[in-house]
Image (cartoon, rainbow, N blue to C red; front, side, top):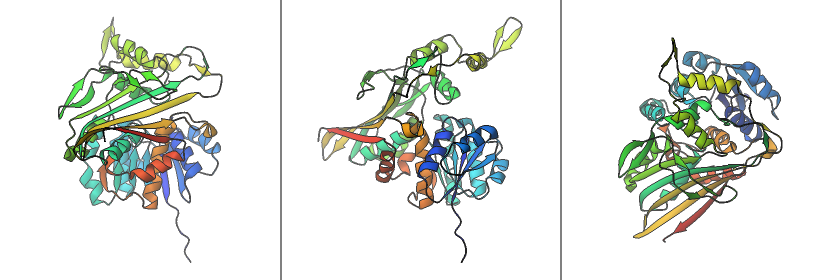
Amino acid sequence: MSRRIRPRIAVVGGAGAMGRITVRDLAETAGDVEIVVADCDAKAARKLARSLPRPVRVIEADASDAPGLARVLDGAAVLINACHHDFNLRVMDAALALGAHYCDLGGLFHVTRQQLTRDDEFRAAGLLALCGIGSAPGIVNVMARSAADRMDRVHEIHVAVGTSDRTRREGASLLDTSYSILTVLDEASEPAALFTGGKLTFVEALSHAVRVDFPQPVGTMEPACTLHSEVATLPGSLRAKGVRQVSFRIAFPGGLLDRLRFAHALGLTATTPLQVGSAEVVPRHVLLALLQDAPKATAVGPRDEYEVLRVTVSGRQAGRAVTEVVDCHVPGMPAWDVGVDIDTGAPPSIAAQMLVSGEMTARGVLPPERAVPAPSFFRALAGRRMRIVRRRTGR
């Protein structure tokens, strides 16, 4: 009798800030699968492997080298790309070469739109490339689709993210963030996409803030527009239902939004060279170098974080105007020593497991709202302490 080959799930960038959470989720929840941590920092990957409750395989890999990545990850059934979105297209190339499904954490609008043009390639190969399966994009896309499916017509979809972080820390917090500072600086500087009046437009980064009363302990915040992939996909996915408005807004915790506005106003987020005396410097490179050497705020107590992902969908059902507010409550996973970033790191693990089990059957290059089965996805979130709460008015 031949031995059954276990499906192999490889996490590219698995030793990074979000990749570590994806790997931990796989180690804690995936059944009979082989887990591969692929990272250019083999030392960090081995350190991560030693902390896990089950054996994983560590491979040194360069996400910028698609042929090399395909060689070292031969046999993978799913590639989870936990790298910065600049690597998305190259890791997609590796997935195609391998004959593997693909998931990533998002393409910050512009890269996502490039990825979607490759639908025919993945469909012809019988593969799924799932673009943006973190929290936002990711969970919020599935929430939006689940609300839209309960309406005959959809007019507006508004996504808002609010986070409370009351963790006690020592030291000053400058631009500290748990995920890629490069992505945060892009969000703080690149024009933000809005879909309004049935047309795509762009507004100033961190503008158009609105007051949102999130559930406690997040409370009232004023999330602002940043560039995000939800606006790249939801208008097309729900075009048949007549959607005319789509927006994304985020409120960072602890005054980070104001500090980002200040850095941007000074020109420190700029990527074009600046002449300073006889030297030519790139302001963002200077900022990143300063942040690299700056002391970090250090937690001195247990994590006290809470995040709410909110999607508000308005439309009509049976001739009546209706609005559905869907909240995802995220208290973190203290047992894994993971805070609210569980909502970004866990969804790729959930999606990969759905793919190897055959529960997710869509093929092509698709956003989450067109590929992820909402009921089972929400059940998986609940198993990680993420709770979906709905409130409907107007029916």
